[in-house]
Length: 432
Ligand SMILES: Nc1nc2c(ncn2[C@@H]2O[C@H](COP(=O)(O)OP(=O)(O)O)[C@@H](O)[C@H]2O)c(=O)[nH]1
Ligand SMILES: [Mg+2]
Image (cartoon, rainbow, N blue to C red):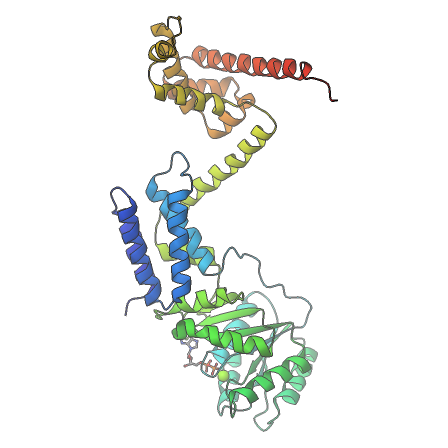
């Protein structure tokens, strides 16, 4: 059975081994991605949406300078997978007020009782005093199962194998554990009744009577996109805020379960990754996808994109403020260069000026010098002091004097533009 990760790794290796990354190659990469997502049981509608968006973004968005096509596609794939699996979520569950009551719901076999033990363990390790309440009065053995988990984790426990009424049991449990000093109280509930209606009815009453601070829906990753139906059914009974997806280990359908939860606008808080008590991980889509892509250099690529977008914002600010930066000068010179040598351009324009070899050289040299500057320096030339000038000169193989000459030319240009705009302002006709 191919895991979700293996499928995505195929996509990454296809991107890495592409040659031109033209539309033909892009299509074949997208098909590979679709195959991996469908195998993971991601809903067809979501698969088509993500494919369209990746394709559109790659073909239509401007590729930032200095990034290869592969980098750009990897970044878009990363963004869109994060989006598919829950988006940018970083905030942690706030344990307030104390005692904090967490009620677990979900159908039988979804992993509730195991998850109750794992969560108790998780918060105990964070320094909380935790108590577990066995409120599954239906399943024989549910009491023993949770009691054993509580003992192995070393947290408080309340249960009563004789009690049939889940509500009064849970109320008593909460009261008892609160008196005993529990700061977090986790209530395990039943997942099966005579029928679905009576289960939902019990969940509703429990919610109303216990007033938990948080409800976690537990779903089973091996169910893939079918968890969407559970998410909807429980949503009608109880306003759960968080979902735990259990059995992510070894399930090829984990991606389908995660994307179905994300599409239902609930947030996956934890994933279960094994049967042992420590096999629980906070779920952060960004980190999950980074691991999925299995690229040691992904961080570096993302870092470069983040830096670039920071400068993009700075640049937009400079433009809005009417500021002319060295980056503008650089781009101007580069676009002039594209037309051909200066002498040729002058000739084409019918200009009677004679472009000397010296002037021809200096355009090249200036571009070369500016290539040795950082984006920060290009956008804020004022920060270029003599030690930076020495570094830039070394990097571009010129003398510090050459760098100063360029900076002087830039300052003159700035002054001219200022005068120009001032004289234009003065020359404006008065408002009538
Ligand atoms: N591999 C694996 N098995 C799990 C995980 N969570 C729960 N299980 C197993 O799933 C089965 C049902 O779990 P249980 O907690 O009793 O589900 P409940 O009926 O919802 O309370 C048990 O055999 C658990 O050991 C998980 O994250 N990974
Ligand atoms: Mg159970």
